[in-house]
Every structure is written in C-alpha cells, then in structure tokens.
Amino acid sequence: MKHCLVTGGAGFIGSHLVERLLQLGHRVSVIDDESTGSVDNLAAVMGSPNLSYTKASVAEQDVVRRTLADVDEVYHLAAAVGVELIARSPIHTIETNIYPTELILDEMSRLHRAGRAVKLFVASSSEVYGKNPKQRWDEEDDLVFGSTARARWSYGASKAIDEFLALAYWRQERLPVVVGRFFNVVGPRQSGAYGMVLPRFVEAALKGNPLVVHDDGQQVRCFAHVADVVESVLQLTAAPAALGGVFNVGSDQPVRILDLAHKVAAQINPSLPIEFVSYSRAYSDDFEDCRHRVPRLDRLHATIEHRNRFTLDETIRAVIDDKRRELGLTERNS
Image (tube, rainbow, N blue to C red; front, side):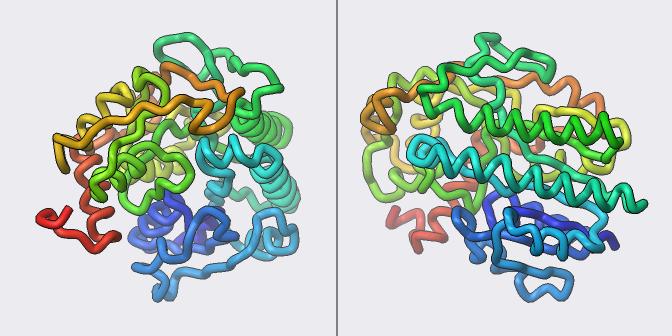
C-alpha cells in the first residue's frame, strides 16, 4: 500500500484518479479548495477508510507540509480550469497555477534532502504549445504564445512555468518528477460550467436547446476518456524511464468541433439546431484561439504499455448517460 496525495482530488480528473488509486489498494489523501471541484465527485468513495479529505487551498504551506509528511507519491492536479475562467479571471489563473506548484516542489525538495524521495506527477496542459502552427505537436516543439495583451495565453504561459520549475528541480536536485501535458480530457462528472465543450453540448442537447458552436466550428481537437488518461498517468508515474520527462497525454484522433456537435446531436436528437457564436460574444473582444490541437503520442507509447480503450463515440455515450442521470432524465424524456 502506497500513500498518495492528489491535489485537486475533488475535481473532474482528480476524482477519477482518486477512485482508481483506492481501487488499487492505496491510501489516498486529497486536498481541494472546491473552487471548481466538488466533494460530490467523491461521493462513491467518501466512506473509504483509506481516503482522507481536506478542504483547503494547496497554497497553504502548513497544509501542504503536514500532508506531505508521510506520502510516497504526489499527483498535482490542482489548477485553474476552463477557457471561460481563464478569460474572466487571468490573475486567479496565474496565481493558482504557479504558486502552489512552487510550494509543493520546495517542500518536496526539503524532504528529498532529508532522504525521502517522493515521486511527483505534475499535470500540465496542451495550452503550453500556444498557437504553434504544426499539424501535430510533439514534446520538443517550440511554445508559441500570443501577445501579453491577450489574457488567453496567460494559462499556457503559467503552466509552462510549472514545467520549467519541475524540470529545474529534476536537473538540479534529481527530484523524481514527471510532467504530463493533458489534451482535451472528457468523461462522466465533467462540468460544462467553465466552457468545457463536450459536456456543454450534451447538457444543451438533453434540454432540447441549440448546440452553441464558437466561431466557425472548424477548430480541430482530440478528446480522450478520463479513464484512459488516468491509466496513462499511473503508468507514467510508475515508469523509471519517465522521470524528468514531459509527455503528451490524451487522444491523437482529431475531430472538428462542428463535427463533435453533430455527433452529440446524432445520439440525442438529430433535429437539434446548431447556433454559431463569435469568440468576442462568448468571451471577449481580444480572445484568440488555436485552430489545430493534435498531439503526437510516440514518446508516451514508447514509455508505457497503456493504449486508449475508448473511442470518441463511446466517450460521448458515457457523457450522455452520466448527464442523463445527473438531470434525472431517461431516454424517453430527453
């Protein structure tokens, strides 16, 4: 039995990771301030004797130091979430992403110097690539951000700082860290409240509303089921060859956002209309987006055995079934 700390463990990805760690027989501690997560995400496991839950910010040094005292692994997933939040609260985004990571690394460095080598997985984001024009991104590609006058890029820049910090501790102190760049992760329990596109489409369709597509819908993305992402994270953290490395994590199967909307409608009500909304109306006049976001997974696949099991259609179905339960709907009345 290992003792694992999951920051942001009441969030969408974090709660699935917590469930999987408990299923594997480990002891799990969670820190979450519930700013975007919810303790309800952990309802199925809150009664577990192997789960300890602390509602607090990862920016609280005493909480971090106390919790890290006897852990074997740390999964740092706490972060600002969603394009909508980024556009609305850039100060919160930058502070939430950078300071807690620095605090955790500093505390783990102290433990490392005392002879305790605690493994750290740092959740980064495909946002670090910015608007790199390549058709498929690999981990050695340049990071291409827009103007600092456009708040959109503050998220990617702040996550890049997280990566630089983590890798600096690896190079300088051999702190055992692994960085995973998440692409679009979707699945049950994901909220559409912060601009996440798939749950937003599903919730609208189940309520009989138009599916709102931003801009022209020709943006290309890749969507991975959260269960596949969690397995990749666990195998990366366990792999000695992954230490000090940066890995794309997600799906490499591209789909246009407009086609995603049609796929959702096809499974719920094919007659639902599509409504196009400009970025300026959805977010702000200075909002910029990346048109094409597709990862290469060669490095990931050379390091771990796991391969994604869920197709996009299966993932969409899983999100629909989950939202139906959440809204108290059956197929007949949705």
